[in-house]
Amino acid sequence: MPRFVSNAALPAAAFAMLFSGFAATSASAQQSAIRRDDGAVTAGAAPSVTYADLASLADAAETVLRVQVRKASRLKPEQAPGVAPGMARVLIEARTQTVLTGPAMGETVRYLADVPLDARGKVPKLSKAVMLLFARTVPGRAGEISLVDAGAQLPWSGETEMRTRAILTEMLSPDAPPRIKGVREVLHVPGNLVGEGETQVFLQTQNNAPVSLSVVRRPGMGRTWGVSLSEIVDQAARPPARDTLTWYRLACSLPAQMPPGASLSGSAAHVRAAADDYAFVIAQLGECSRNRPAVER
Image 1 (cartoon, rainbow, N blue to C red):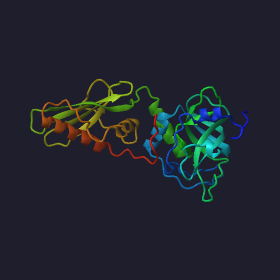
Image 2: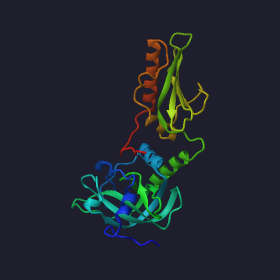
Image 3: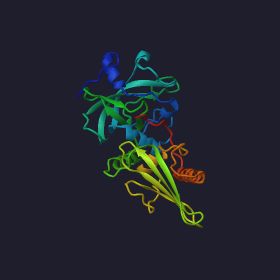
Image 4: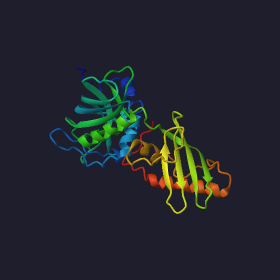
């Protein structure tokens, strides 16, 4: 079993490796209730995490695991640059309970995290707290992980783990929707009848996989739209259900307005129709609600 090393004894190089990619987040995003196995809560109530919050964390993580804290040691100010006011950076040793995704972990893991101070300005008692971690392994240092951001340890609950597992299942599926980088081009084609037409929105993806949106107008009927994850633009495509991975990729990545110059339509009227149909899709997707900052990848 690895032995816990205090922050005073941990070499500077080890801190540098643990801190790699560890970006400080705002204090409001990190206020969290930390629940122990005995039911005690050691910090203020946390805002609930949204689907977008969990998806952003999972998308950036190499490994997601549930742990129980054994020991936490507060770092000295010079060892904790960028800590938000009212927060403290701690070095945590925890026992691995289960790995939801990622490489196998040893019995004990160590990582840095930022936690809210209590009313007395002290680090809350973390011993026995059960956490869900979103992290990356540290190359060359077995048993050490780096959280994807400073607040990427969530108080564990059965519901949070269940929701996270569902997201990970979607992400690991062979037909998972790709990450969206932006809008590549938009084309509006008017129909033969007044009020008839179709707008096609072709998206740029991280792995160049095809993703397109289609908006269909028919006289006397409301507009319909859908998303296609293949080379074929299907008029029968349906909108994604909210709080699914496809919905997240679109709602949390697409710009709020059609980018200037994206439309390939010939006339000004066609460009306006394309922009109007794009705005319709954005409104139908709804807000990408977050209670914490998105994780930078």
